[in-house]
Amino acid sequence: MLVVLGRAPADREAVARAARAVGLPPVDLRMRAQGLLPKVLHTDADGERARRLVDALVAEGAGAFLLDPATIGRAPRLYARSLAWTEDGFAAIDGLGRSHPCPFAAIRLVQKGRVTHTETNEVVRTEKKFAVGRAVLSGGLMVSKTVETKAIESREHRSAVLLVQRNDGGEEIALSEGHVDFRFLGAEMAPTSMVNLDRTLAALRARHPTLPVDDRAFQGPFLLGVPKVGPDPTELAFAILAAAQAGEGSG
Image 1 (cartoon, rainbow, N blue to C red):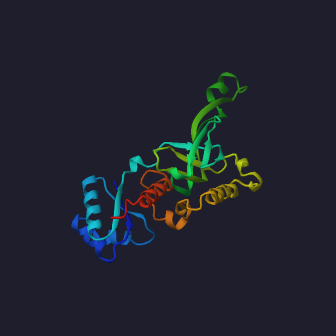
Image 2: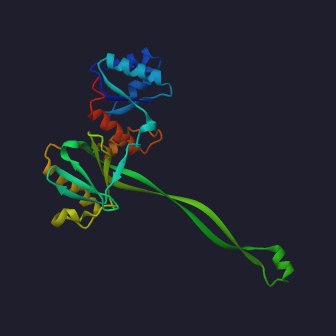
Image 3: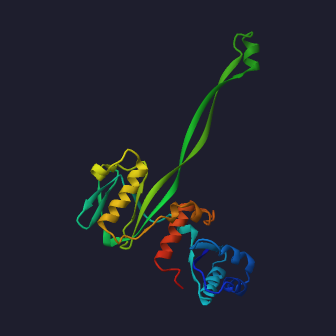
């Protein structure tokens, strides 16, 4: 389990006291509590101890909550190919041309980040190798043979994404750089997808000025504090920030 510190206590020694209360090294947790919040303070395979640490932190005036890394990045998600503006929000258009309405009232948070996609392909290579037996049998006329080898190659692509997280039970909507037809922007459409992604966010804000937006998952200094515990760091950042925004770290 991940123990996330959403709000630091007023007392600088409070984190150390909470650590001692559950039998953890106080110096380690005190050091990890420094920097940009919210952040993962502690990872623990013992779920009960992680819960006790959260309770101890809250008792010390901190805001803390638990995250299960097994659930991160598992929420139903629609990767939109385009958008269409509606009277009360927008509709996400999927790859089959189907429309998925999303009223502004249903949006809990819009996050900007950079997500890693892994592409795996089987690669077949052929090469000629010297064959002693073939050379002897053919009297030197045939000295090589063609050998075919197969290998699995993986390539990682990082792309900027806008993630629309909802409060009505609807699936998340992702607008991924390089995978969206931005013609819905009309005259505001630019030649580059990164600029168009930013202009899409600007258009959402113009239509709904109080739209909650967080771009910390796109910022290097914040991501430096996100541990590598399994999920893509940006996916973990999305989960941490969404939980903190929902008030789970309020104590």
